[in-house]
Image (tube, rainbow over all chains, first blue to last red; front, top):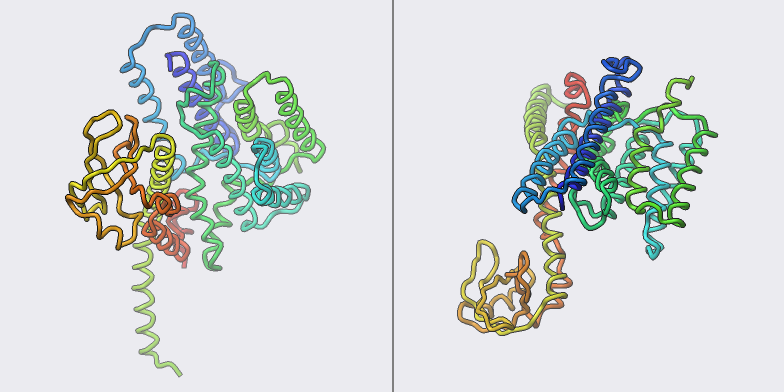
Length: 287
Length: 174
């Protein structure tokens, strides 16, 4: 891999970490600090935008200049990206899950839809049934307004992590996999979605252990205390929810017909958009 | 009717068991994580081995050079298709004790080796028992025991898995 793709992957990873931080900040704090240059944005949003602009300038320069770097130098750059990334994944995936975005059942339905569309054509019927049954269950729950029991929330969240793991597995994620992407944008999306999906895949191990608290009655209070940090009770209006699902389906089908963007990159991008932005315009106007 | 002394003894035993379980529960999540990583590594190594044998496997007569009982493997020497002398390893976990008895230093055995210079190309398999290698479970039973026991401990005392997500005083409430 040349310099520009390496920079694109690194930029994707950094921007995604900043987005996770911004989402966690926004969902947990009542009033994040305003930006310095743009007071209408929060400070972390401002930083994310600056990093995005600066990184793309660097990527464009690297593509234009295309310096002839040695294999040792490129390996050093890749190790410099992977080392801190794995450290981040371990700390924030297993030890301090403060950056896990809070989601609701509607987000899970949207992610589920993306996963079902991403499945290979020749999948065995029993795997399809194993995926469709919980998907239908999640959809039914998403169509109701009732507050969900913490035990059920934990199972829904576990299913959400399983869906993200399925996407990671299908992408066969190596953070710097070079043969599935061709443009710097695809490398950027690959880096961002890679860190996001791997973070959730590692958290899946810890959450699987957290689910054991549902077994003995004296431990179930732990799930009740932990789930509010991961699961949001707010929902967007049903009409808007179906509108978002329809838009997702149209984008995916249109891309499959036209082949404009690599399918894996599009699906990964849609997952990031759903998780980070689905609750944004509507979170404040719920009663 | 239970005597107060019996109830006191049961209370002390229960408290000791509780403390013991809590101490184990501190280590259990780490044990589980290490178990998962080891399991994934074993799984991957086994499938890579099978894929390499399918893609690049060639059969040759080899001489057993040593037996390593600690790592449950044997060393073999053979001449590959290009006439180069090579050495390889033969994992004994795939074969029955009767077959392993026949693998002794100096014995000649027929093996499938990986005829390509790639990672883990030193691994070989017995040609007459290739089907056993393909049918073998990818992960040793020991790993499942480690995962199962650590999971059980966490199921009884899951408090430490919730560290960082639940306030400490609510974590250890009685």
